[in-house]
Length: 264
Image (cartoon, rainbow, N blue to C red; front, side):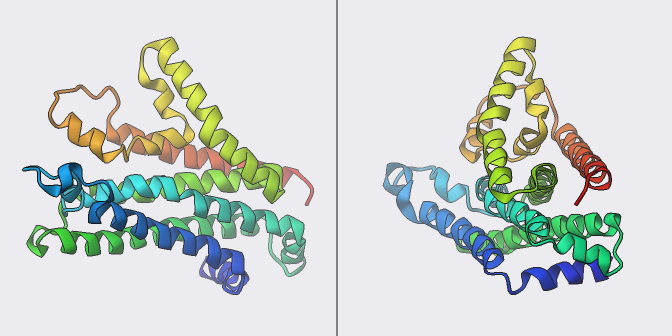
């Protein structure tokens, strides 16, 4: 397994697109949150007795806050996954891998190892960013606070990257794959979710592939508002985690079937 992952690393370490897309995520996530934290969206000029923006970056809330913004910027890495996987078809490196002695399953598992590595890397980066913001806005004695959301960041990243890899295997072209990804992510799933929730008067639409992990990291101010109002959760976080992982398993099964049953 380590050998497969090291080969994947050799493919991307000198690939400019990899560093550009990863760099955009790494740059924009802290920059955007820094802008919020330092006053762009301060309420009442920071003079109110309860400053919600400052509270969003103490150790108890920083993980959920960064997690929600991660769910926004994670699309950069998702697009990167599509590009890296479809490049195997565009440059025929998948066939070269077979010539070099790989099996198709090894080629598939190499890409899935890359997905897991990217999800782990995303989580570690959010952790480091959260520690920095937490120290800047809170005392270190309150570390780590409610860090459960950091685990949700890993689940969300794994879900998004696995879905992106499935799209790449289904369509095999980066342009088409990226277009389908955004079409589903921004339009199709939102419409389907709204219809299902309306039709059944139950939030079953929240269990759709990407939405299931999105529900783990809701918009922070919504969570703060909920803390003042007693609301009953119809679907628990544990269910969303289980459903998200189930979807990841579905992505793997479909991509495996697709890879083994189609020509390269």
